[in-house]
Image (tube, rainbow, N blue to C red):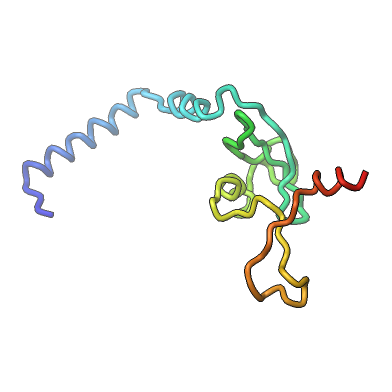
Length: 133
């Protein structure tokens, strides 16, 4: 990439003007806070527990139209104090993964032959319990 002296001076001048605007009192925190609320606007807040380890950190989940929209650590919980580990932070992406199993499956032939052949779909638990009663 070729940068001549004129382009360098333009970019440097824009940078100086931008930094001086921050010193004059232009605060971007309200804009950032407003942008964060846009994705969770109208969502129901649910406090739940992270299922990945025995620490049981609290997670604030935002649910909109029956789907998980956002997750964040609970700042009021004394153990994690608003922070989540890597597994807890990946909870949102794990619910949206297209490779995630959504139905129970079983190996054909039971446990002894678990590595052989494709796994079969099991009927849902509600159907099994409905037939028992």
